Length: 328
Ligand SMILES: C[S@@+](CC[C@H](N)C(=O)[O-])C[C@H]1O[C@@H](n2cnc3c(N)ncnc32)[C@H](O)[C@@H]1O
Image 1 (cartoon, rainbow, N blue to C red):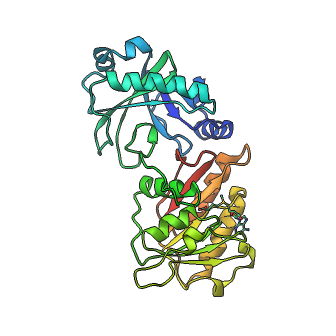
Image 2: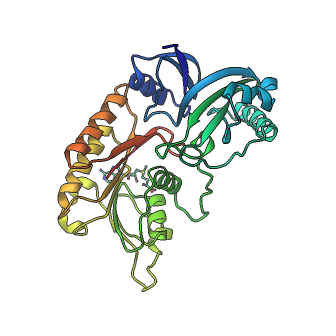
Image 3: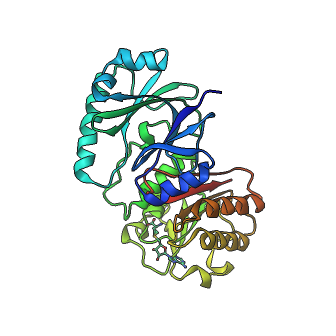
């Protein structure tokens, strides 16, 4: 089979890129810029460390990429949807230059730039440098983000105590979870409370474990009957026992700044404190070491051994150095 280039769009973190390359070995990285890596491969590739993946069709100049007929010819037909997005960068000037090209291309290409539906053929138009554009293709399925560059078009409410609000909403959306009012969530590493704010705002009774204090914005949230929606267990998780937690939880969340192995051990211990295992675990793993890809794989296997039949992981645009694992 003829070799193809495959692109993976990753956040601009060296560790994430190292994990991506380790995860896709033996495929070899080819053209790359920070936040954008192509691989030479004779089959499609994807990785939990990539935000978007697809097959590269061509590298174009900005001028050529602005020509819809040129993009259509590469694609072989009119795409159902066009996703125009720029690679990540930590440099503000570079971001502004990439964004200017992105905006011009988005205006020039006539196909809908909307959330995709299952089976739709997407032309990915990726601004890698202000004058260098990669055109790729993927067919949308439910495991991928429907948005260009996997960027959820959602603004944080002003009273959300931390960016973890966005991380949680992104994860719920990406893993197609819809927690319901009255359900119970437990979060390890809950302060200052962005995720708890999102959960309580959805009407979940949320218990957080964290030695740090919670935002008053979370503590103030009430059920329509006047009951508090949030309960804080202000201690490190090592000191938590059954009596500190509700008898069961529908959702277990974990967001602690420790290595994946330690997070996995905390999650396992916490699951064992409930009468039955939580229906869904949403665990954030920080990529701390070079062995990150293997470490996260080991934690995914651990969740499988605990009886979770469907365990997925993904790097989300809202959680730069982290991988979010969803087990159900
Ligand atoms: C990234 S922050 C969590 C953000 C939080 N999820 C939110 O929604 O705002 C990590 C938190 O983990 C907490 N933490 C660190 N070690 C912990 C432990 N052993 N047990 C419980 N919480 C811990 C820290 O105090 C810190 O508040």
